[in-house]
Figure (cartoon, rainbow, N blue to C red):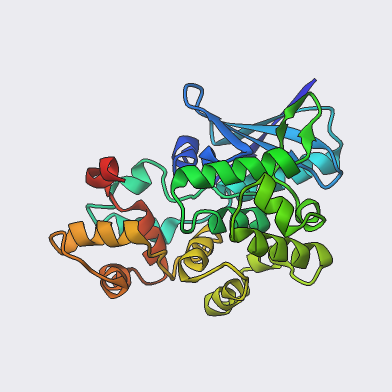
Length: 298
């Protein structure tokens, strides 16, 4: 029996725009159907039940479908995860108002862009972000897939599909196993350390979602995590809805160089200067800037 319910969303909204907001949809346990324009995610609920959450857009919101029956608390759990993953409650009105005056961002409001797909837990987003560093995207896809395959909890009706591993599941492993089975390389020690800190209760990552924490302090806490440097911290801040910092990598340098410096070599300072006027929204402005003319070169 499939259980279906609808969650409202603050307009403008486009589920396909959220799905395409960055590469997370290509990383397990996310999946999407381009033809149906739906998003799915394998999740282990607080009750211990493993379910596939299917999300589609409907008038004024999103429809959630899960094989049931589910208890009321499980439905609440699923709803909370979906709200966070696709930012249903986010209010981007101020950003849209500013974007209307910039031709390179004029499309965002009309197309319902601005929300960025994120994982249900910050632990998962941190691990995935660390696995993007110093590797090609294909390496990230491979490492995340291996983590899920070897350490995730299986879906009952299809054991080949698994959740992203909880901190507890990773914490009981060891660095050698993570290197051998998930082929994480030097990142294995970072992932293991993070998992053990979270599993032991020494680090409350979900507390990082508290909007009362100032962005500079939040950035400081992220940078204190082994394996999280300036780029990773800025990327994670964007996922947390904090847009004060720019995730400067080789792609950012290339984009800004082509846009404002005739393709000449530039550094972090030039990237920062290009978006300084956007203040608290500079990370979002950079993320959704129209770089389409460079898309084939990435």
